Image (cartoon, rainbow, N blue to C red):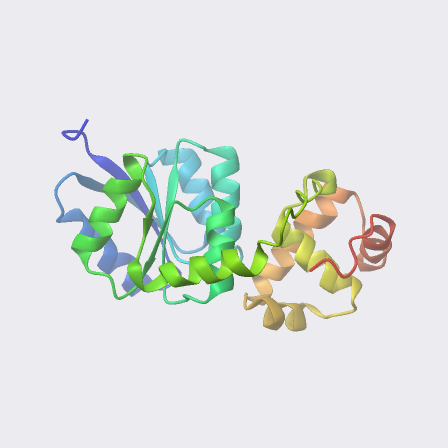
Length: 222
């Protein structure tokens, strides 16, 4: 019902942005800011504890980035929707976020009213893509829509698409710093992904991870 408050969690690694968004959104009718997270891992923890309707998600954050956090939230807490709010509007960022399950994608120059409108649209089952990034969606879809492209095979051991990318780069011999640079994420996020890979696949070190990647034909898949 429109009289009910939409519960929003803000996730951004910059405190001034988190506080500013919380203040601005708290002034909008129909919105209640229930918490703020400094990275993707904290966002997941707060979603589990607070059950917000919407997470307003930054993309580039330490430990766990916004794409990975979006994917995990949508897998574990499907009642919570994600609206991305970021400065990154390249084709890859847009497509990765939408594939992970985000229902909205806004840039950080959006006004409080535009953010509020996007939040309400997503709560009511609509998508909310800023006009400034809509052409990126078209470009991304056009570049990946080969005729009769087969459905991608499911990944082994519950690996996510991002974990596959990291594993493939490990198999290519890249260091954590090099992987971070290649994927435009922090080294702490890379370490987090590698820990998840080790846990899911049962490998104990990078050498075993490389062997696993080649055994499952995942090397070069990133």
